[in-house]
Image 1: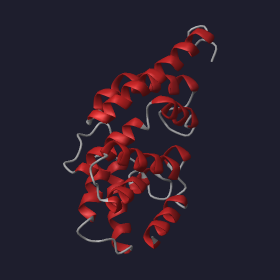
Image 2: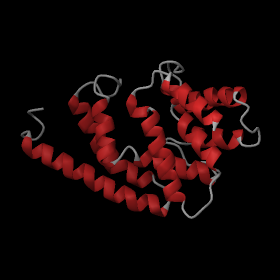
Image 3: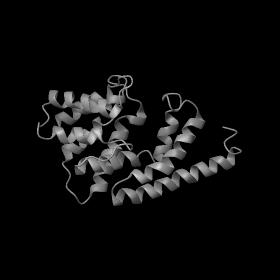
Length: 196
């Protein structure tokens, strides 16, 4: 338990934007557990991978022109060694972190597969929309509301096809529909986005 408290403190002090912070990591952890049920995933591996999967994009650890998944893997390796995390579990945590992005193929372990699906799903639906709009002006790709809308359209179309597991695919369909309903309503209410 002490390691988890220490890890939580590290993530909170990293200066991370809430879209990638502790609550996002917690949702990813819990959703991965839900998707994997009734499998018995190693809870420590899943928890530490979920909490560290975006650490490489935080102000404290980010490096320019370095993919955040790879940076997160490197930072996590150092942190896990310092925390005396079980050495035999470190490669599993690092694999899940490295392959968590939707543009990557999933890793080979169950933790890697379910963590990736959960992270993709957290970019869809109402929560995905909230995260996108919270990033306006804070992310180089999302400087204006129209950027967030375009990203939402792209995510709604592309991300459900990236989900690997059957339970994840069912949730992806529902969350895609949530996004499309929102975008359709907003389009009607803003003269096809002209009045945003």
